[in-house]
Image (cartoon, rainbow, N blue to C red):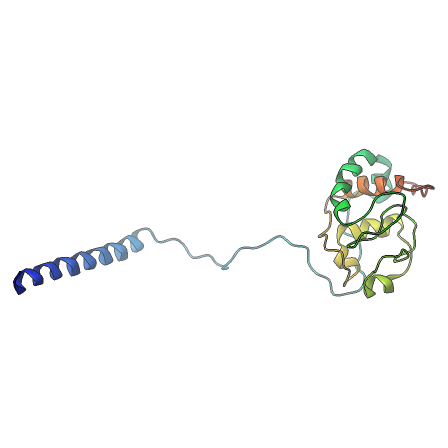
Length: 179
């Protein structure tokens, strides 16, 4: 093979590469995708509050009315996810990742043998209906520094069902607030 043949082959390869590159530039001009005004994706997440206590989210229906209509059976199904970290039986024994939820309504905060975070110990008070509702809606917003990794339940009706079930898990259930 002489040098003329090698030059023809090299020219064909370079010409093909130049053609492909030109085709790429032209197709980018013809089929250009619009650039987003704000790069990235917006992820839905609860806003973190750095205060020790935050108010419960605004609800159109008051909690006592929701609790009057709540279904503990629905709440039992919703609480199944909680059983991964919390014990739900009458023994009151805590799991490694969460305290027992048996008798939690009207119980003092951080009063069981579980190893609570310092923020939870400092909270004080009792787990009344409003407090449990606010905590289930946004745990980290109510007690910044809590060990609970649950993001919160945004639906007030589902929270009421959960609270109704938690109320039923007691030897002496606390009376429901009047609507």
